[in-house]
Length: 503
Image (cartoon, rainbow, N blue to C red; front, side, top):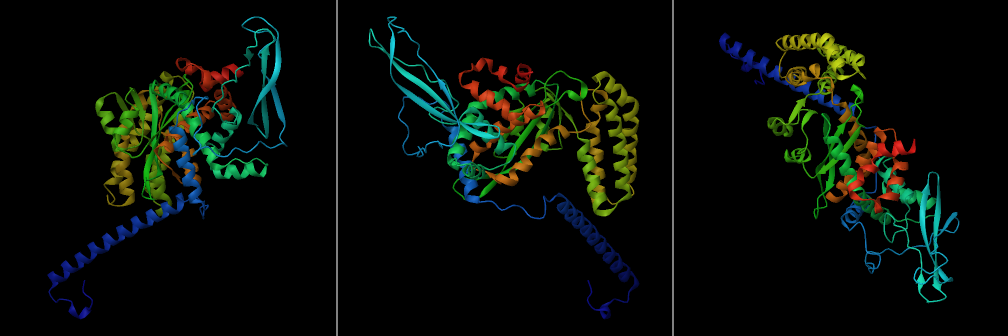
C-alpha cells in the first residue's frame, strides 16, 4: 500500500476503494495470525515434556537392523548343521554366582534294543539362562550318556525343544526382553547395560537376535489374534506414523503402524477383546485394503481418505468418531477462548453422559436409550452448528472445526440405531498409546523386518493386557510350548485360553 500519506489520492471514489482494499488485507492478516496462534498453541499443548531424552543413534540403528535380520532367518535351525562362524558371537560362560536348577534327563536303566543293563559313560550338560521375575537362574539340563553292557549300544535322552535352537535363553528370559522393549519401552542396549550391572554380559546384538527369532516364532499366534479381530461385527481402526531407516541413504522415511481392535465389553458381548497391529512402509490406501480383505462389518475410524475405497465396496460400513470432533473444539477453545467452542463441548458432553447410562447393557437396550436420549441432543447439535457457521468466517479455525463436525456427524449417526457401536474410536486410540510412548525411546525402525517384529510383539502384549493377563507370564508359557505345538491348534495358545487354564 501507500508508504507516504502525501501520495493519497484526492478522488473520494478511489479513497473508498483503497480503504476497502486495506480492510480486506487487514482481515486476511488477522485470519492468518489467528491460525498461527491456534497452531502454536496446539504444538505447545501436545509437546511431550520440555526436553526429549537424547539417545545413542548408532546403538538404536544397529539394534533395529539386527532384529530384522534375526526375524528373517529360519526360525528352527538344524542342530546338526555347522554354525555360521561369521555371525556366531563368542559365547561367554554363564556367571558362576547365579543359582543353578539342575534337571537330569535319563535314558533309563535298560537297553531299548536288547533289554540289557545300561552303564554310565559320561554326560552332556546344557546350560540356559532363565529369568524368573526379580532374579536370574541357570537351568542345568544333564543328560547322562549310557551304554548297554550287553550289546554296547549308546543311549541318551533327547534334549527338549527350546524356543531358539543352539541358543541359551530360557522362555522366561525371552519374554522378559520382549516385554521390556515393547511394553516398558526399554531399548535393547539399555537392557544390556542393566544385565551387566548384575554380572551378566549379554550384548545388544545377542538380545536383538533373540527378539527377531522370538517374533518369527510367535507370528502364527499374532495371525490368530488378527483372525479373531476380523471376525467381529464391529472393529476399531487407527494408524500412527513411525520413522523407518531408508536403506542405503542414512536417512529415515515415514512408515506406519496400524491397529485394529475388537472390544465387545461395552455391550456385554462374549468375545475376548484383542488388538491386532500391522506394519507398512507407507500409508497408501491399499494397505488397510489388504489388512481388511477378510473383514465385513462396521468400522470405527477417523476421516482418513484411504478408507473410502473400503466403504464404497459395501463390505465395510463407516462409523465416525466423536472424540475427533470434540478435539477440534477443545483446540479452538484453549487457544482462543471461544464461547461457541465451549458450548459445543458442553453439548458433546451431554452425549457422553448418555453413553455412561448405556455402557455394559445389551445392544437392544443401548439402542433404545440412545434413540430416547441421545438422538434429540445429536439432532439439536447439528442444527445449532449449522446456525453458528452462518455467523462466523468459514476460514477461521472455529469455522473449520464446525465444518468438520457437520461432515462427520452424518457418518456418526449409525451408532444411534445399533447397540454394538460406540460414540467414538477411543478403543483404537488407546491401542496406539504404547507406540507413541515407545517411539520416543527407539526413535525409528531399522527396517521393514524390524517393523514387522514390532507389530507382532505389540499384538501379543497389548492383547494380553486387554484381557487382564500378565504378558510376561503368558509369553513365558507360550515360548515354552510353541516350538512343539501343532500349527493347526495355535488357537489353544491364545491369552484367554491361558487365563482359563490358570484360573
